[in-house]
Amino acid sequence: MTTRSTESPGSGDFRPRAEAVIDLDAISANVAALRGHVGGRDVMAVVKADGYGHGIVESARAARSGGASWLGVAFLDEALQLRAAGDTGPILSWLAVPGERYDEGITAGVELSAYSSAQLLEIASAANRVGERAAVQLKLDSGLGRGGARPDEWTKLTAAAAKGQVDGDIEVTGVWSHLARSDEPGHPSITDQTAAFEAGVDEARAAGLEPRHVHLANSGAVLAAPQTWFTLVRPGIAIYGVTPFADGSSPVPLKAAMTLRAALALVKRVGAGLGVSYGHTYVTDRETTVALVPVGYGDGVPRHASSRGPVLLNGRRHRVAGRVCMDQFVVDIGDDEARAGDDVVLFGEAARGEPTAVDWAQAADTIGYEIVSRIGARVPRRYVGEGAR
Image (cartoon, rainbow, N blue to C red; front, side, top):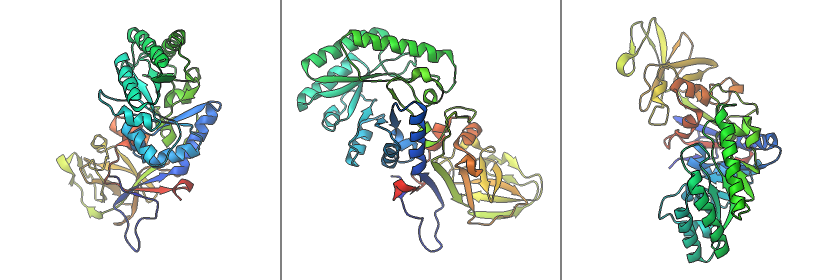
């Protein structure tokens, strides 16, 4: 389990090997900025996957503080965790398998997604058992080719949902879908999916359903595709201050919520011709100083960023020298001064001159989502900001 603390790390001379500092005020501010950007529409803050590595409960509270009227999670267990922590607001859970504990979700007031008429029947049966009507949002596959009902199944699903409402087992509160390429602003698939979604909403209404919550926009669309803003928007990575766009841009100013830092374990002077780390893929070309950073892929630092990942040490940028190992990597700092215990920042806030999660994503040929969400349980989280008090 991830270690969580709202206190300063340790006492006396002790300091942690590494920590992820989570600025809860940044999450609140990002949610508020996004809500303003979409003209005050309802915002569903996505806090699945332990809040993209930031902490599900802490992120949820910060998002609510920033104006999120909804929370979105993948799994029912995540929704129940939020309920156990005291969250009483609207929550949507959207990914399940046959035999899911729908009974618990219904009694906890969690809204459930249905992708097929078979799944809807399972939800209705659970509602009948517990004697409570299930709030359900139907998901249409508008072109992502992943979860949700394709057009032929959509007709069956909406008809089954209309019958379920008449029977008193379910209430359809929403219709939603998900975009495939919203991280590519202006891509024609966004227009195509929006049209397919609107057609699906019209079909649902023609079947006698009256969805109050209609939503399509994820982070990329929230930032750059106003045609996808219906009654509700559903930002995920953006609430944590990481842009979904590969070039690192964002039309809405966002503040990074996670800063990943470590204390140098060792600094030593070495000569030219020294092979560094496994495979000796990096060899010093002069007398130089190398510094050992005690985090690695066992902590979630991507090995694919070997010889490319940036760090900030004593106000200067450097890059990983050689391969990222399970617990550590090396930085060649040339003739710069440093000593064991000095603070090194892997990624954080660009406004402070720090590398960003997107910088690491570019170095590892991946996306910023993966960089923050993969930081593992060996790295303690320290929460700062008003929400941490």
